[in-house]
Image 1 (cartoon, rainbow, N blue to C red):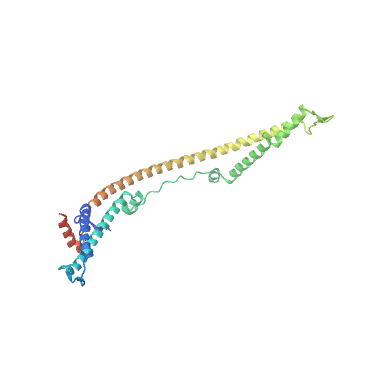
Image 2: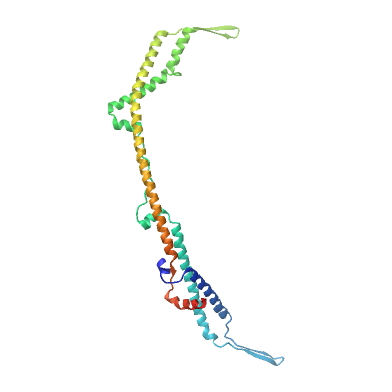
Length: 293
């Protein structure tokens, strides 16, 4: 559209074109007024009763021959105004499009390069990923077994667990073997007799605790190794992400600078473009230009 309406060397400036378009409106109004008042029927008026005052309305000379010229002139004037208005819209649209141009459009349509994608963070490895990457079948099984043993034994011997409660009950029954409570008018006496000795239960309970600590220690050692490898993986991927992000930001800044420079140069170029004068409108342009001086 720029090549159709606008030219870098010859033509009208926007200011000049709008001035001539306003003159064209004024000239068109004259021709429209002329055409609005034309009539080709003469009138002879007679007053029979009085017998006098007869006159004739005559057609002005040249009206008939000038009618076609006025119609044709209005058509040219209308075309000139339409051309100027459309060319002005095109120029205004070009300037607006430039000011609104995003950097992605600049890359695609002007620089013909791919706009960089925002870097994505790599997904960090999980414990299961480390296991299957760095450990063999026996080691994986040992780790999973330790995990199960620690969780299972701990469930029963930790405070609140059933074995822990049972051990506490045995100790309580030996320290406080008899309990009394009122039952109406009577007295209720309960005597507790443990079915196992405190000594035997203590040995068994402490053995479970000792085994649990040993298993927990072995499990923690393997888990610490895995956790350390996870931290290494996270650290390495974070470093790569930050490098990629830095490169992305540098590239983005560079492209934005290039885009801004391009827009600045294009705004200056388009602002200087003139509205072309088609050959068909050259005569009416010369007439209006002469009237405008």
